[in-house]
Length: 229
Ligand SMILES: N[C@@H](CCC(=O)N[C@@H](CS)C(=O)NCC(=O)O)C(=O)O
Image 1 (cartoon, rainbow, N blue to C red):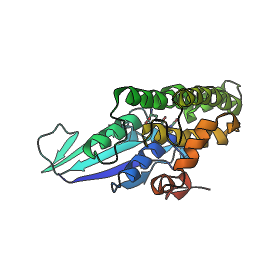
Image 2: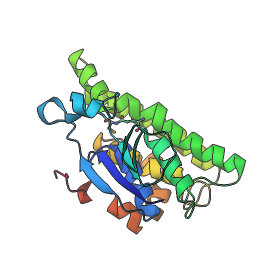
Image 3: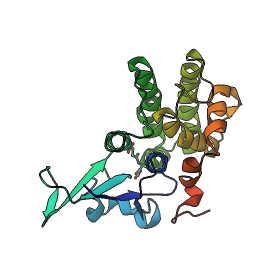
């Protein structure tokens, strides 16, 4: 089976960034297709894009496979074209298809802790500071930057407590996992919204450990073809 991957994303999207890290950790080739989230009201809001992602969000992964016999979104002769949304689902898929460099610990308890850590970000922080939420806060007369700073700070407090409880050293659970994949983009957003990160020594130690790794460098926003620095 020969898979070809197209990743629809945006350079500064933290959810896309997670998937880029996973691709690079696993050394899987992929094509990156920029979706500009801001220009002209946001390309994610076009009918064409919403046909592949009805939530009007990035990332979306398109999988072109020469394999036969699977459910597909549509079929071109002997080629299957499938799509996936949600960074956690995409990363979990890649991890099962490419089991080298596993991104989930095998120990059930540590696996659950790594997922909990990632989910604090995935469901407890990022959705509250997403672009469309900040625009809504602003349209209701609120201060978008203060709001984002507050929700990120609250989540990072919980992440630091979780890391401390595991006596985390260079990684959360003793290996690179979804915990680091979700953490690094969230710390970037913390800095963007002026959260004081000095109160989170365990998180900074983990960041310091992974930030010089090739996969994490390649996945950085500023290293993407659509980066606007
Ligand atoms: N839970 C989703 C989150 C996706 C998401 O929120 N994407 C943001 C960028 S990080 C987005 O596309 N925002 C567009 C908008 O708010 O209009 C995932 O992990 O893939």
